[in-house]
Image (tube, rainbow, N blue to C red):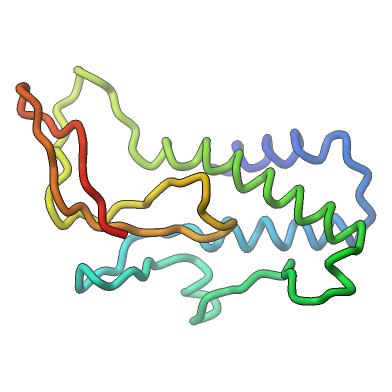
Length: 156
């Protein structure tokens, strides 16, 4: 994970001119994104959507982030826009690399257990907000002729 994060940071900031303050703010936002990732689902009930994350252990609450759109003055600031853009680019690229690593599949070589009704899953979506990890519960599984689950219905 560290290698992929380092590679992404180098790729994204390669052609950017960042001041010390901008770089510091950007790295703090990246730290928040990484520490908000779910470590394991903490689900006693199917309606409970909380997941255990490093930030929930460190802060004992959800972290809202350092880069927020609340202030009108900051909203039009060039540096704020740059940090926000870089953080969004990092989020999208990191999701593309991190999510597949959570469930490595070696097709047709190793028998894996199928999804089952009630399993908790991370819902990967293009519309999810940066730093948010929407969880869903598998409601129904469609099994093909081979006895493998190919499609699931997820409730968010």
